[in-house]
Image 1: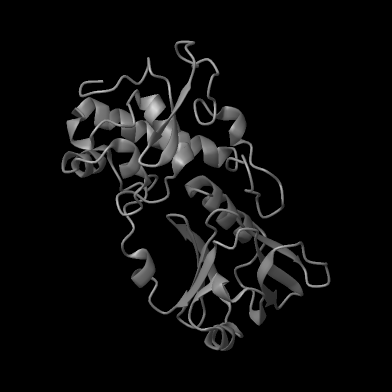
Image 2: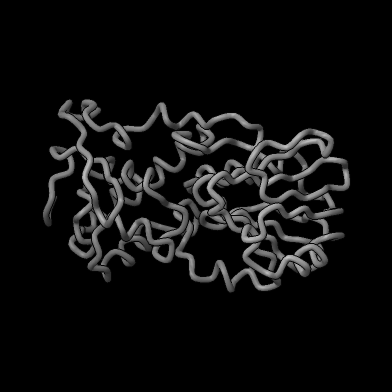
Length: 276
């Protein structure tokens, strides 16, 4: 599933491609459940004629604020992909939704597994309001993360994946950050010392910033707006590196299941238990 760096890369690409300022002149829906709300008829009627004012990201959602005081939210989920193409260009398989633009292009939503969802709403907080803080926001500090951790008894890995706790982190960057911080994914959050909490904060910032610089991680389906894969897969330290030598100690990386999710660790550099 695209995580914060991938979704932010898509948002930046759409801005570079001058999507802000474009007016939706038509809507084509090829799989009805792609639109979570409103109903198909209202979606078409309300969206047509609106102009894209801004393209941003919140957590794993793309956010397009529109001229009619409404917001278009897009969640790519597992295999969703957005791209721009001339309206005359043949569509790829698995096209679920497309938007005609005033300049003759189309914004297309391609989704092989049909998990992606699109929302048109006048109240984006009804969908985004439960998300936790943005880990790369300048206002989010070490003390903020430490205070959040202090009151939680959950294991670190499932807690980092909880979008209500912190927004935008998924399986890839949780594993990478926990490795950099030297923390076992099954450690309980409230057992971390202040130094360990600070290490986790800086590790999250480091792995997310690097992935943004590398335009995201492509392991399966993720592609940028231009159709190119990301480059961060070449910089992964532990994620999907089972059996490879740990970049710190040389021992083999291991895979385990934590909270139902495949998880990758160095058992030497990330010892279990309080005080690890």
